[in-house]
Length: 73
Image (cartoon, rainbow, N blue to C red; front, side, top):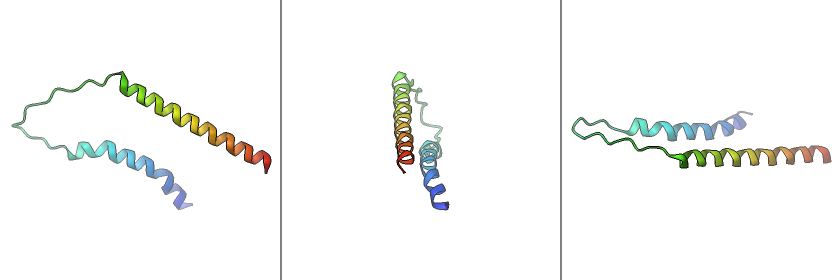
């Protein structure tokens, strides 16, 4: 049971690490001029939407497979 919980939490921990690590690794220097912020355009939102759609598709396939197995067995 503990292994299943750890297995389910691992992706969230990795995503959290990937999102937080750049903040911890960036150094602040006073003599370096500030870099202007780059805008985040619609491409990022399309990638997020595609990821959500793909995850929903996989979840639907998994649930239908489990439903078919429960009807057969």
